Length: 110
Image 1: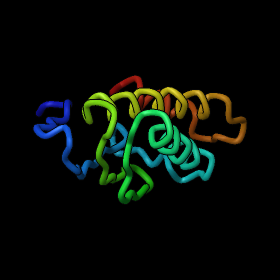
Image 2: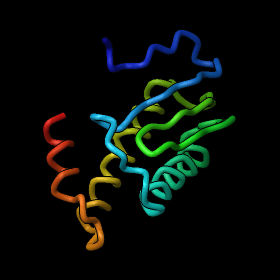
Image 3: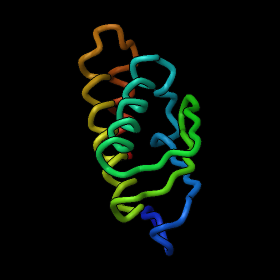
Image 4: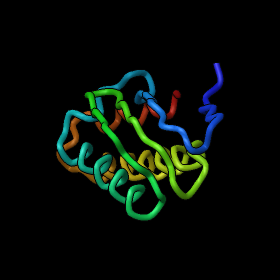
């Protein structure tokens, strides 16, 4: 299955879902959910994302969005790339993260 989203109408409104690799429960801690919210806010303010609704679950998320400034696929790719890097850094820097080694192992395997 292709990992790239196919957006045939750049002006359309899209529903997308994506999961953490291996469906790992990352979003159980508030600080990790806040990274998602901060990234979404950045995309809204700086990247032209119009966010209609969203839902963060423990191991995946759903978005209904459109894009006013760029290709929706590029916008979503930028969001996911930036957010995943921030999440990995937050996990590594979090002294209270008891699952750190296991999470990093799961991410590496994927």
